[in-house]
Image (cartoon, rainbow, N blue to C red; front, side, top):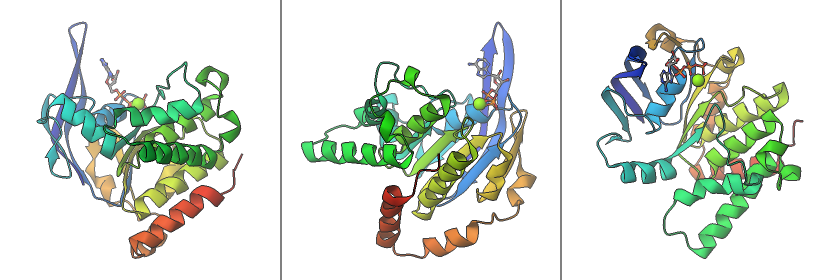
Length: 264
Ligand SMILES: Nc1ncnc2c1ncn2[C@@H]1O[C@H](COP(=O)(O)OP(=O)(O)OP(=O)(O)O)[C@@H](O)[C@H]1O
Ligand SMILES: [Mg+2]
């Protein structure tokens, strides 16, 4: 579970203070796909960076599974992030001189003590994700030889490589066509069906019909009223899937990784 309590974040720029997060308090339970929507500059990316252990708030606490993220050491936080949290950056942050496969595998560099079999498994998973996101024929391309939407899908595959229980996604569909957008949302739903948690920032209005909860953000504040937003059309499916034995949902996800056809 993700728990934010009274989180404040202020940036200082040329002596000017910008309050990006104002007393943000929220919980995201396991198995939930939560979307944050709001105008440009309202603080969505700042919120995700803070939850992802990448940006210390000025005050307030961020807890993930009872661990207070900013009281542990930077090294411990980096390890925790590598194992538990996948992050899709709004600006992708791909390594410019690495090809698609190596960019996806780069997520495993932070993992310690990998043996040979674990490395083989990671490579196979990277290839599965690349296939799932329709990039197999771009495997050896470096980012500058990819379209923006292809880069976005590489960033998503990289975020998912280590099978993080928590996925933080900053505008992950911002450059995708409708087919790929649908495919990404369905993947995120499958991730939550399997017990994972998704916190996603977006401008995309469509997200409300996929996410379990959509919260509006404005000027650094969450509009808590919108927490009570209608249950999405996918929730019934999700609920049913949550009752499946974990092994079965794992198999379903693996099967979907292999067989879902490319949509573009
Ligand atoms: N490093 C920084 N230094 C100073 N101000 C910043 C910094 N990063 C963000 N801000 C400011 O903080 C506010 C929140 O920015 P943030 O990037 O979180 O917004 P956002 O909702 O993600 O916007 P967008 O939808 O355009 O991505 C904005 O007013 C922005 O100008
Ligand atoms: Mg942003």
